[in-house]
Each structure stands twice: as structure tokens, then as C-alpha cells.
Amino acid sequence: MSNGKHHITDYKTYAWVLVILLFFTALTVFVSWFDFKALTIAVALIIASIKVTIVLTYFMHLKYDYLVFRLMVSMVFLLIALVFVITFFDYLFR
Image (cartoon, rainbow, N blue to C red):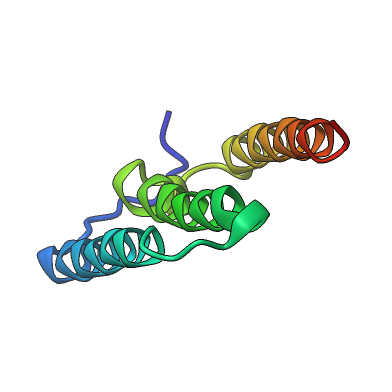
């Protein structure tokens, strides 16, 4: 299922993606040393979501895929975000 255009990702792009992912991993470890009270989990999930978006875009080639696949992945992210919001509201009002 190709959309007609052939893409080859060079190693330089993968190297930059690796550096960015390592930066966000180090940021996750750095942030874990601080206590943000109720926002600790939210900060960790935001950083993890950024890393997942980078992996989906470059390693799973969603950047070069059909629009319908990108929309399906976006809907999954929207569903996950909705579940997280409902969970946080449940935790907040207990």
C-alpha cells in the first residue's frame, strides 16, 4: 500500500531523531527528580506523548503515508487523551 511516492530516509535524519529522543529521555529522568504534586504524571505523559509522536512520524513512516492513516492515528491519540482526562478528573474529585 504505497501512495505512489518512493521515499528514502537518510541516516542523518535518523541520527537527529535519535538525538531528540535521547534528549527527551534525559528530560524525563531530570523531571522525575522534582515533585510537581498533582502534575507529576501529567508532565511525564506529555513528554512521553512527544516521544511517541516522533517515533510514529519517522520510524513508522506516517510522515509519508496516506492521510487516512494519519487521521486514524490521530483519532487513537484523541481517544487516549480522553481516557486520560476522565481518569484525571476521577482522581481529582475523590
